[in-house]
Image 1 (tube, helix red, strand yellow):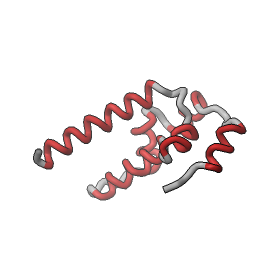
Image 2: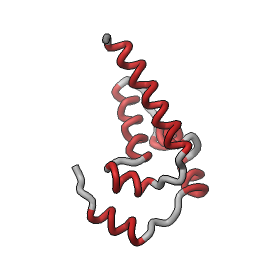
Image 3: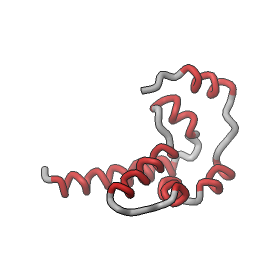
Image 4: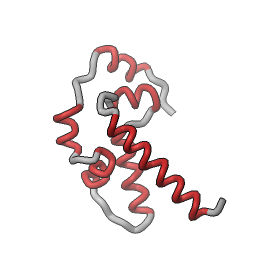
Amino acid sequence: MNNELKDKLDAAAFRELLSHLDARKDVQNIDLMILANFCRNCLGKWYKKGAEKNGVEISDAEARKRIYGIPYEDWKEMYQKPATEEQLKAMKNRKTL
């Protein structure tokens, strides 16, 4: 498999991940952090890092909008719920890389 095809497949998988996360707005970022040690905000940071490596300057807000599909503040207002005591405890006790 050549690099061009790998890039196309990687991009397709990333788009599917974004679509999946968009369909699962009930899954909170803290839940993702507890389970997988990354969240939508991490994806935004990685997206921005990838853009910068390719000579494209984008803001944090632009990168997050790509991940969330809407401005981050709007997403937070519409979908983010306050963390529960159980979530906060699990977050504190999680193992980090």
